[in-house]
Image (cartoon, rainbow, N blue to C red; front, side, top):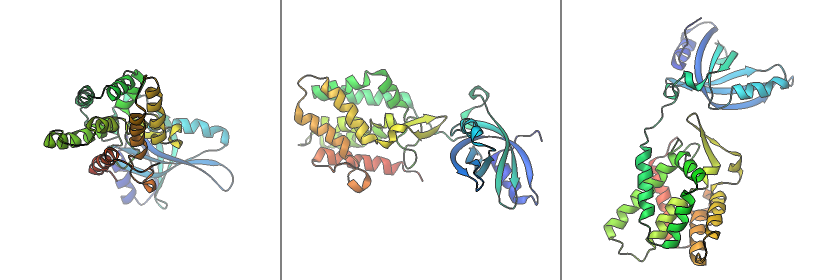
Amino acid sequence: MSKFLKANEIINKGSESRYNFQFLSKMQIFSRTTGTTRHGKPYLVISMRDITGNISNIKKWIDNNDDLEKYQEILKIGNVVEITGEFNKEYKSVTIINTKVIDPEDYELKEFVDLPFIDEDLLIKQLFDTISKIQNKYLKNLIENIFNDEEIKNKFFECPSAIKHHHSYRCGNLEHTIGMINVFRNFEDFYNRNTELNVDLIYAGIILHDIGKIYEYEIYNGIPMKTSNSLIGHHSLGFQLVSRFINEISDFPNDLKNRILHIILSHHGRKEWGSPVEPQFSEAEIVHYLDMIDSRFKSQS
């Protein structure tokens, strides 16, 4: 048993074989839960994948609670591991016999996950081009100060926009933001700013509406994951971050402060959709609709 089997080979062999069989494989963990047997022993239920397919209902039985933490670290979501497994024909399940973490230098992530192509440099250029064209000095100063913070900037460029549903990959939130900008720019160009709307406020709202996601989500080995801050939610996290930077700008107009913070809090549109408040003015409504359009266009099952 020296050949490493791909996920699809394990699945095919499992459907064709009349007997249980053991195999070697290298796969990435993308979900994991913990259970307890009726005798009080812990076990892990894992889903794993490579570029050929996914395998669920993989179990690692653990003799005692002292070993649970050890295997939770080895079998952490995002890790690529080498496993010796046994396929059980009757239950159509896999039991892990032996496993170890593979060093990231010893594999290419594209072997395990189909990563979308993202032209990160182009998206970053479009973001800063948009910021440079904002005419309101307070909004421009606010956004420039935020993105002058290297930690915030790097997190914003990296973070996904969701765990699933839309833009759930590295740079996903950046792509989502630029998607909204590009849709709105078409309106702006068509009407040549012949509008009563505060266009600068809309652009600022687009750029800042999801900034709280830099603390809500993170990417590990191509897999989007929630952080402990996800209990607070990106609306509140974004509100706190932007409020802090606004308070550092002297004479920032109070009405403008309330409007940009309202856009952050209201961009999900309805309270039943997780919005703390609902849009109360046109610019907030438009940011909500742009958010809906772009997220639906890139929605994922």
